[in-house]
Length: 321
Ligand code: CP
Image (cartoon, rainbow, N blue to C red; front, top):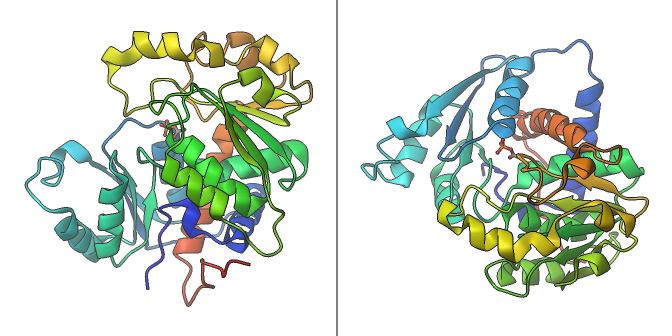
């Protein structure tokens, strides 16, 4: 059976650990072999991207493969002229791995169900697993561990990064407190939150996953303070003024960082200084956002090597303990 990366929720703790370790080893490689020579990656993005698009291309070509950036507007699929099932079957005859960035998580899942090559979720409105896997490497670099780390996420939490962080926490053993307005428009998806809270794994500490509307309480004593754009790609631009009004209380500024004196600051980028984070924080000494962006490349090499490895792989799902 083809294995994909659609959701952190599909990964066992051992798979998460293995990817973080492989990404770290990839970062140390000086003279690179060409293990993916003759293999082709196709990227199909319905939304803008800098980091994901470029770092997947660089990852693939640096491992000896080739990369095609297929402009989504040229696709009969994007124009409603071809089914996602047929596109998946056709592309599986041409390329070895596909990265998709689409609003609809279900559509990506339908693509994967019909593909005979690995499919990577390069961001949907529900999840951003490749981002958060790279973030685990960044957190471990900064703090020397993942287990027992306290992460505070502030801002818009009906958000793919928040969802992937929630699902990563019980697999990597870190605690996560989400601070957002008490409003379904900004709170994590209840299904994702319930799945994260229900996840228990043998050998991984039981984690605390909390949601509060108090940003200072969430940040107090945290090891990581994390935020994301208030205007994610899925958000209608006409909602901007309303969202700034609702989310300003959750801006990460010097006062928030003062509540977490040992914390590093993280943001997946792109960032808007003065909106979700002040310039003194994102450009300050505790910000690791550019290490975080660099680690996307190392994690993407790890993902491609893992998904395109010849021969049988260990099962990604593990029995719950
Ligand atoms: N963080 C992230 O996914 O960046 P891009 O939207 O530029 O790919």
